[in-house]
Length: 240
Image (cartoon, rainbow, N blue to C red; front, side, top):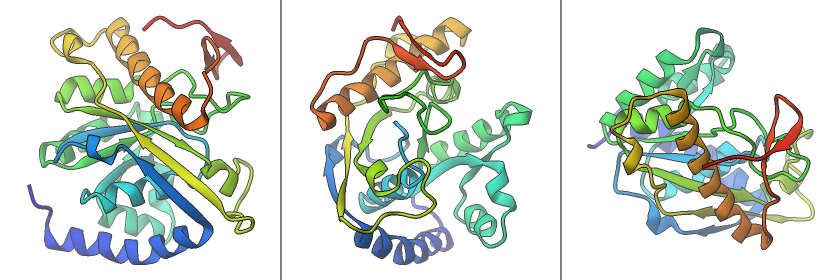
């Protein structure tokens, strides 16, 4: 389904501001863009830098899709930024209210053939080695509820341009932000199941396992056993 002309114009205006800046601070390498469906899909990615959303949004937009992010509701209260987010139909997440309204809004975007971008961890990774952490279940819930494909994406190198503690990107030396897109996550056997905690955790771990596999390729090394749990502050064994 074609997006309204006004919405596309808003994205074009944003791209004219964002893309030159990204191209100035880092080179880019994109792999696997052919794995994006034509429309109506969820992108699930790891999160290593505050610059990740701009880099990934750039990639998705360049492939002909309008990227819709689930963003913290506080951002929508900021002057100018909040208005831009709302005009571009980004989706506010109010964690204090459980996020149900945001999932309904995302469902509507997907029903119109849009692309939703979610960071399943819900925040920048706190894993000491920057591997994907244990996921929250919102992405899995949306995927199983809507039946749309989930595309796993790994990002790496962007954290060197803008580390977790940095407020601005580092221009020199010029580094490369690498993004690798995988094939859809296998969730078909879960789609007719009741959305129990067990089912949602199984789907979430499959998503994170797929993301981790793509990141292993980018990093050219295997991930450690287990997955970092930010609640306990330690790595724990997981069962897909």
